[in-house]
Image (cartoon, rainbow, N blue to C red; front, side, top):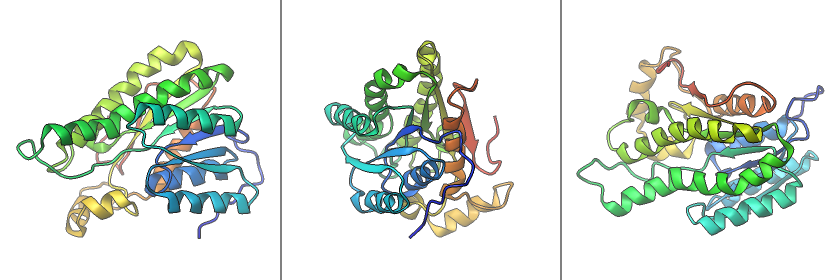
Length: 262
């Protein structure tokens, strides 16, 4: 079991209140652990990964940190709104929203995908973000200096590997959504940024959708000559979240070892 030790010096995120969606596995777990390590109280959302979410909660509670779990299917607008309301009530306030929930679901080419698969992929990776953000904005705007960080993907920049058309399209839209919301929500004191991870091993995503041969080939093309780990993404997310009173908004931070630089 991993621990989440706090440093002796207070972090900029100390005593801030955060919701992390999709926090039961992979990047969501790593992000939640990093925010807890920095001193945040974390409301951890999960859909089906109850065991992973509970693992993080128990780790946090054992160290005297505030963490609770909340279940919801974020593709259902009423469930997304209810999760945000319950989580914010438990937190007592809301300063940070991390929209991590999403999935490739399956690899299908243009000629293989059907309307149901297309809609479901967009609902999971884009629609769910809209539902959660819309429910969270009234709470985020109360205190000002709030931060939203969306999880995009290198696939949204480059189009992704074969069969990821629907997923890459949705993640590209997340990048555009981030830019649009940064302008719309700026008057409310809410910054909106995103991160776009490349090959991040140690996650369910790549365990299910990336073969060892494909991973080795991709690593050979990465300038830093290694794959990323969930902690690499978590630190980037914490940086953007921690700049809650900063001047950074509307940007997408690329975390890919140098594969794509804009």
